[in-house]
Amino acid sequence: MSPSPQDFTADHALTSAIQLLGWPQASRAQAFAHWLESVSTTHQLRPATVRAASADASFRRYFRVDTPESSLIIMDAPPDKENSQPFVEIAALMHAAGLLVPKVLAWDADQGFMLLDDLGPNTMMQALDQGHTERNGVLFGRALDALLTWQQASRPDVLPTYDAALLQRELQLFPDWYVAQHRGKTLDTAQALALQNSFSLLVTHNLAAPMVFVHRDFMPRNLMMPWDPQEPRLGVLDFQDAVFGPITYDIASLMRDAFISWEEDFCLDVTVRYWERARALGMLYHDGWHSDFGAFYRSVEWMGLQRHLKVAGIFARLTLRDGKPKYLADTPRFIAYIRATCSRYRELTPLLRLIDDIEGHQAVSGFAYGRV
Image 1 (cartoon, one colour):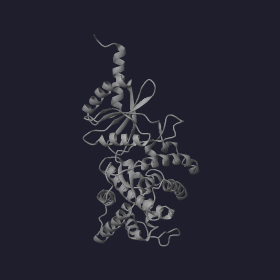
Image 2 (image 1 turned 45 degrees about the horizontal axis):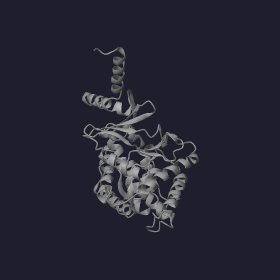
Image 3 (image 1 turned 90 degrees about the vertical axis):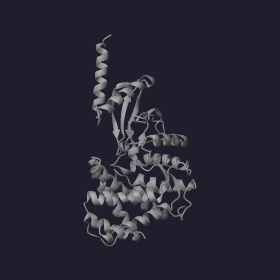
Image 4 (image 1 turned 90 degrees about the horizontal axis):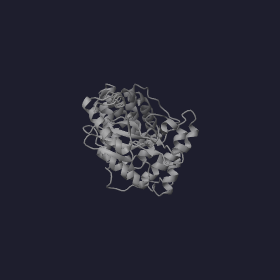
């Protein structure tokens, strides 16, 4: 029997929708079409409604597809470029901890296609009032709820350890990609030594912190506003690189965001709230942190400095190697973070001078709010 006009229209609509998603290879588009068809009946999908939802800095992409009642999310993660096994395992770990994370409804591990439930239409980033900082306290309080829930579930030997070797590899992205490739500068022997000494100082300091589960990219772009307005939890995404590492990492990531900057007073306010809650839970008995917020905040800043150096290198690599130039536009934010932190601590003066050389900044002496 030949197809009816209705069948032809549906097939044509589906083909058009899939083509609009953009594919590096026709064979992968065809494989996606076959997979989508195979899961459509079980999950009541309307395949022709498939459309782009978001993309991230990796090779993963996300699509949204409608059902009669709502919508679901599809992850496209080419298996030759992305290993989705950690995503599945960490999603289960987070769900068991009480976090709101996507449920894996279907997964073709060989082809790298995954069907997930849809946590919501908007990220926390989209819900923030950037013009009125003081209005965002409740949202950040909900973010702290998720972070503390995650950290309280921590135990060793479950996730990979954020050890010295990994921290050092991440830091090396800064000279390899930001300095050499983006800035086109070659460090002389003294500069290279100063940089490596600063890296060693950061790694030693940061690894002295208590160890917990670390999301590793905990920020408003990866937190979701749930569909249900009565749901108190924010959804959590992009957790596949989670590790067991310093407790200071995720709060530094949240308040020194890759894509938005906050005034120092607001950063301090939210970090104080985190500190008060974490110490009440018995998580901050380390190096005077339980009684001295200043000591804790110093460690948050030093952890943030490590992250900013790493991310500056990653964003340069995304532009120069992976053809994603939009990320490099945010690197001035990281350099500002780096310089501000280095200016506050005498031990980091050599790193500040080196950054000034790389960026072509005139060194400034005397900082009104310096810390030692």
